[in-house]
Image 1 (cartoon, rainbow, N blue to C red):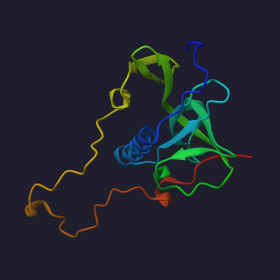
Image 2 (image 1 turned 135 degrees about the vertical axis):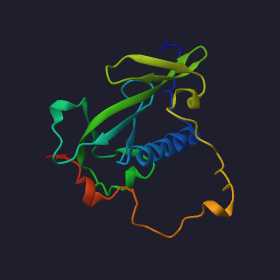
Image 3 (image 1 turned 60 degrees about the vertical axis):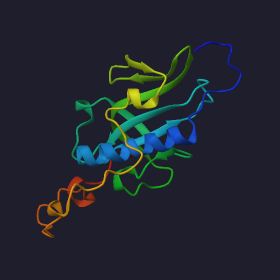
Image 4 (image 1 turned 60 degrees about the horizontal axis):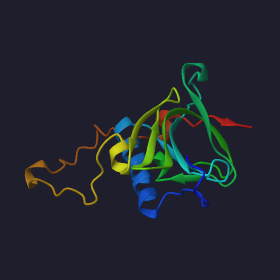
Length: 169
């Protein structure tokens, strides 16, 4: 980051919305909750967002790149994968990736992988996200594809199936 910037770099409301929808889409895609937390610009001069999955009670932290998410004043985006997170609690999570803001010419977003390496740079947020996010929902093709009403094969996430996230005390 260049030192010519007097004000911290922060995400716009539209960018925050897109990041929250990305966390929700990832939760649906992965079948487990994906959290996205915005980290304040106070310390670094730029905001960044971290994407992670809470470790379950049976998960061995030694098998993951672990980060701590939550705490007092945490800014979580989206629907937190359907989890009911306790206010002020800190959670151990598997780090997936992060996006930091930049004031470099032509680069507003930098994606950081699990090893801490910068792996993507772009001026448009959609260019560093794992898949395209449409602003409008796609209309159904026809009535023949409607749900048969059989809910026996429901693959949706359920807290009872996954377990509570691991918290730090």
